Length: 228
Image 1: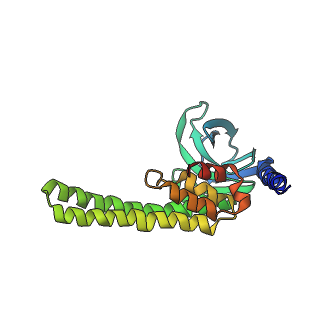
Image 2: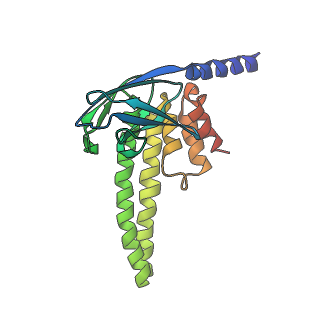
Image 3: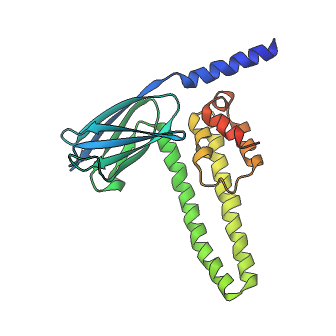
């Protein structure tokens, strides 16, 4: 009986995240000359595309979403299907998403309305700072290797390991724990750049920190698969 209840509970939790919901995008980009945009949707191993029209520097789009996924919006050369640059990268989820900014100024593009997108980008920014430190230190490490300086090579190698294992990995686990009751908490480990470093034990720790509801999602189960 308890086993049956457990199965039913899992099914109910899964259904909650599988029922299709809608996200709506409203964009207003100053000096946007393109008459059309291409929206690439990265759903698991599949990539889907949708072409939409631009009217007076504004555009609208809506689609269904069961769990958050990434989209990329590309500007198209007028009258063609040729891309002439990226407009935005967004992690979409149900609700209204707003895009504002100025054409040809990528850093001016602001996306609001998707909490998962905000959290993911915040994590990636913090991780990027540590990655830049690692890259700079790696150049120093390589110079010691070239000189045959074993002592300083080992010291610098330890510093490189500390950045990865004592800063970047804990940062990842911190975000998973902090957002353990939100889908983005399970999504981050699936899209981080530490997959070559993380061990099965790391994935198990992150999976165990997720709530039961989030464990039942596609992203939660993907984290679990990496524990095997």
